[in-house]
Amino acid sequence: MVAHLLESNQELLFSWLKYFHVFDEYDYENASVSTQLTFASLEQHSTESRPDIVIELVSATKTDILFIESKIASQEGVDQLERYAEILDSLSAYRNKALLYITRDFDPKDEQGIFKQISTSGVKFKQLRWYEFYQFLTTQESTELIQEVISFMQEYRMTQSNQFSSLDVLSLANFPSALKLMEATLWGEVNEKFARVLDNHLNIALRKRKALNELQKYGRYIITIWMPDGRWWCGLGFFVKTVNSAEYPSVQVRLEVSSRSPKREIIIPAMREICNQFSNWQGYRLNEPNAWSGIVKERSLRDFLSQEDHVKAIEEFFLESLEDVEGIKKQYPHLPWQGVQEPEALE
Image 1 (spheres, rainbow, N blue to C red):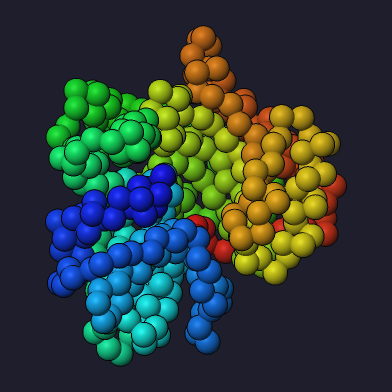
Image 2: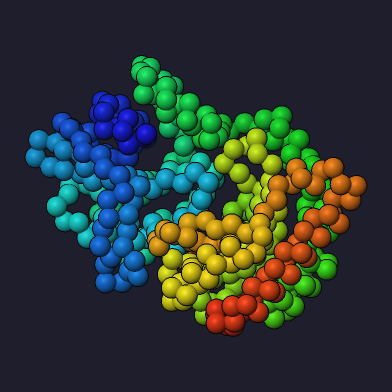
């Protein structure tokens, strides 16, 4: 929708770029806006690159190029911005080149890290938040398309201001007690059984630090065990962040495999079979070779609110689900269950 808006209203596009000082020169006559263009991997890259939006800005004699990478409910992929910067650096036909990283949530990036493999200063990096684009749109002359984009941004919470709402304050005040309940659920019998089923007994203090890191980065408070032989992982816990703020958080047990797993060809077919053989397990992105794919057993926290003891009820869900994981291990011993190491930050 945003790409279509910028393509169809180029005066708005030029005004937006100038308003946020994306480039230093603004003598453009027209622009070309493309989505999901694929750029072949450079020698040092392990995968091709596909920025969300690519804009070519044409003046009388020169052309500038802009890569835009957008994140709403996800995080940057492995070396994603670094790869995009290096590809831009390799494009010699352009006067100015820029990489714009625009996110819904706070996700600061280190420009030096992004440019560490670039020997020239020919690429500009800029970071924005989606609410800034929203605020810019509200100052423009209204059109039907602009109103559609504004409505979409409101629905997906892309309009966040720098002010705490009353709900934010209430959530913050209650977070310590919510965290204690999540800890009480995960770090007793559930953690012991999880480690036993997957033959891994990592330090519990380390697990807790990793869980807090997952909460901060991905909006999920979970225990993970990472199996690098197959570049896949198993995790369980609380998935707090949802695209729709009206949705309840959920509790989940997941098995998820990387798009770059050397064992993906045997893991994905097994996952499809597991969904048919084990009740209440569902697959996601199993037909998308370039995505993290997996299977999940999930229940909304709303389902447990009628129970007298929420912690006990959720524990029982996790323990029953781990029985499934144990059965999956026994039924599919050819999968790469070995090679467990310290849980890592997921891509």
